[in-house]
Length: 128
Image (cartoon, rainbow, N blue to C red; front, top):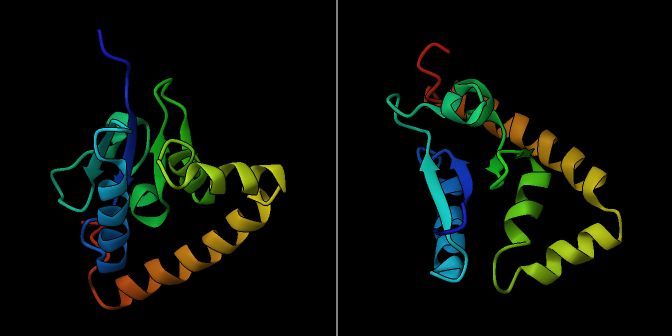
């Protein structure tokens, strides 16, 4: 029986997000089995992971194999911790206790980015 995977919820309708996820997917390859879930299509249901559609579009989420969600910068740290070539970065950020600072910066950027996409009419909430 195989080990459960991490699950990454990402907005495939966001060009910046899609480029970043494509980069991570190339690095992950088969070495880091990850389920990549594009939540941009209205048919996608992040509620299956305990996350509302609006929250999943606003903030990056990684769900660990135990079902625990990691949001924002903490989500990136959870992802980096299992990616070849990024593990050192996750360890360094945690060792230096940078999680709160990174999360603060990420949330400010994500809030601005989400609002910008909504002003452009492409935030994809589908009335959420």
